[in-house]
Image (cartoon, rainbow, N blue to C red; front, side, top):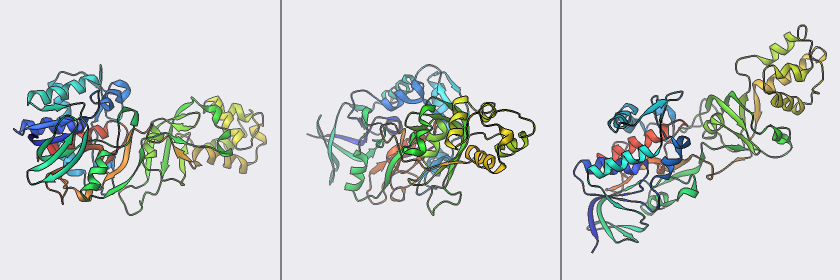
Length: 404
């Protein structure tokens, strides 16, 4: 005999646990299903093990989607302050790092335990590890065939996430279920991911691995392309790697970058390098390597000079203005086309997903499939780096939990 529930939530990550706790708190009989051996690995490894669980500044402007207005309802109804209140209720210490990012003072494990306790306090039933082989709509409700017994539920919530970090269990399950029930998928790709470069244009920069500095980075058009994803601009730290560029600045811009287009990096945002070089011809009686090393890490300064065909011992006073302008542009507006990214293996999130035009922004239910809900990373809503994606998980989980 199939076990009967009001709600089956598939995926016991951030969004799934939040949804299950809220739904069960309304008196619903809820079963929470997950295929993993270890609970909520993505929470556990986030924020360097301390879980950047929200951002005090989180709002619709911090999210990408083909349908940019969709996220407004859920985010307005469950705010960062609401989640902080839950954290305080469980007496979890936290602190703000910078730009509104909130982290656990001790461990991400505290957030996992908090969500487990919230579920336990309202009698959520757990099935873990359990794999779901199929979901079908019947006269009795949704029939879930699993490897630990069949389940019949009035409603099903898909909270199985995206494709990022497959080594901790990411799958395309949510997209397959959406497709089965006739929902559209916005093309997926890795987001918040290091960018890679190869070929002769990158050779001069390979030895710079390990160098980090604060930069401004931009890509795309501020006018957008008729969709929700307009051009991006961030001022954050950049890190050179053996294969390309990483660090918060690059992770942020990667979500806006389109293959085949350049990213533009200002390596010295606080100064006009061309002006400083031309004016310095009469006052800075130095070799070019020494001049640039005043403003940039020495290895980076040398790499930029070599990449622009300038000898390290060339004297600034002897340099033509035209060459200095070219060098200034290479530093203040370094335009370079990535050849790719590190892929889902290193991506923190998945861009794209279930098309939100198919869902109710109030309840997260599929418009054409009563009783079928999608929340969290599975849908086409992707936040910036810095706690925003967790806030979407909490907010979308609560929206569905209050509606199922």
